[in-house]
Length: 61
Image (cartoon, rainbow, N blue to C red; front, side, top):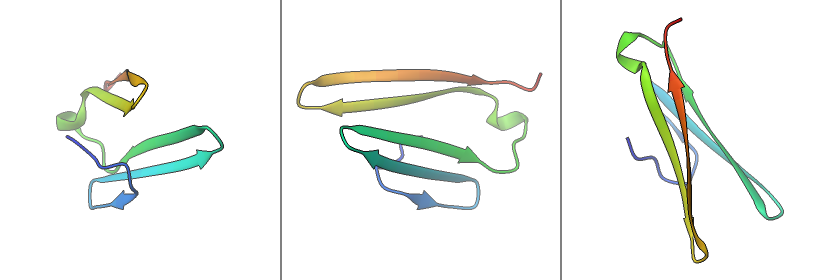
């Protein structure tokens, strides 16, 4: 799933972003989590200086 870098609210997912100086915080809220939502979620940030990413695993344990 690709989510733009602006806030978006939907039935299942909600993205939020907040700037504080040179830092940008982004979050993804998943509503009504079920087995189909389990797996890995990746966040990618790119700018003129490069690219970085982070990975988080959501499981049912």
